[in-house]
Amino acid sequence: MFKTIVTMTVAAGIAIGACGSAAADEKQPVKIGWAAWSDAEFVTKLAAKLITDELGHEVELVQTDIAPLYQGVSRGDLDAMMMAWLPETHADYFAKVKEKVTTLGTVYDGARLGWVVPKYVPEDAIASIEDLNKDEVKDKLKGRIQGIDPGAGLTRLSEQAVKDYALDGYKLQISSEAGMLTTVDRAMRKEEWFVATAWSPHWMFGKYELRYIADPKNALGKAEQVNVLARKDFEQDNPEVAAFLSRMKLPIADLEAAMFNAQKTSYEKAVDQYIADHPDQVRAWLAKDAG
Image 1 (tube, one colour):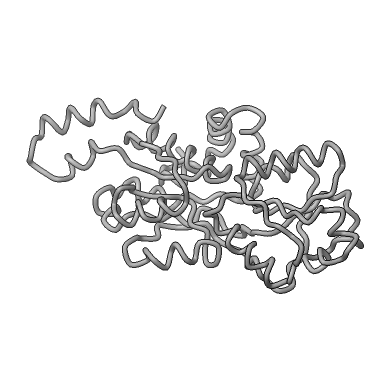
Image 2 (spheres, helix red, strand yellow):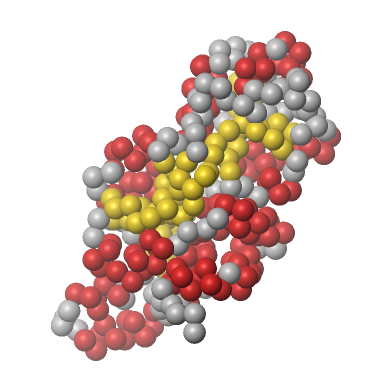
């Protein structure tokens, strides 16, 4: 889907030969890295579709873990990534590469991390993380906090939260997004109590009735923004794509609706639907006149 435009570009590069570095750069695919998180998958595939269909550049999507993404962009192995959660979640990763990358823009802001419980759990039983220390709550939760990937910023912050709130007797279950969702789905079907690490935007808030519990110590951070990072020379090498990525911004409500649609259909169909439903927004990203 993302490699259909390259033939003409390569032919043009051969015809021009060594007359200019721009032609040589144009025939190279734009390499965008992403980790297997629902929000990252949607925005990355949406960008790739528009870069391919509207800007005529081949796109190569590279899926890997979050740490290699930061390393790949800083080394120039990847052109960009669209999921830098800042200022807190990915603070450690960003600090190591900030002098070697360029921030193109913010894909969405108002993102957040937290721990969730199902809405059928009474708020007078669990209103905040502090309530997890109640003996009856600990018994109901079986001393487990369902987590995600070991390398995720949310995991690092959740491990610290366990310490900050002195949650003795609890174990943070390291897993993956898929593993966390399986736990949530199974427990919701049986109306069992659970607490899970989570983030917004995410499609699960469209499927399940969940609520965040309070974090009075701000152990999991406050509101975040999700930025696009690029390798240092990307703006010079590919100004059209860099400018597009710098303008691409989605309201969180629109993103969560699209992610939920992707779960019901597919990411490809959800991307097509989003483009069809938001023509003015897409034109603004592409800097095209409404006419």
